[in-house]
Length: 180
Image 1 (cartoon, one colour):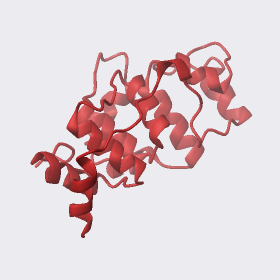
Image 2: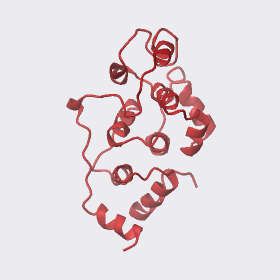
Image 3: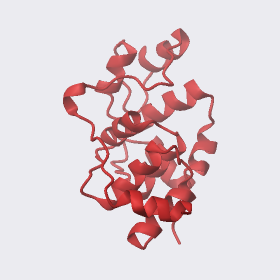
């Protein structure tokens, strides 16, 4: 049985564990606070969506209202350049620029492809993926086939946008992540 056949067979009965709001949010695995980073980001420097009061790292993820704050932390902690991240996510520079300027520009990025592609590019685990989606105002659900494909890929450590898009095409017959 090849990879495609195995995927289609598993998707017939696949269900992922949806994030329970009662569990609470916690910092992602890559979070390793540095005093200078914490001082810079949460010590009063005015960034879009950043809070000006000092808070603990675990509280940051429950209070922030900007996905760009999350992206800044990810890039700083994992030493990934923002340009490399949005290129890996296959999103245009103009779209990433709009995200960078949130919330001042009232831009609301789309779930597919923007938010999902960024989360895949960051190689987030299942729980961190859901947290990132929630920060953007979205949720992944078992009742939506495309969401199931995405979570299947995350659970199986498939983070390449092109490969996830291939799986979507195999299951639902169209591509959602990479524009044609």
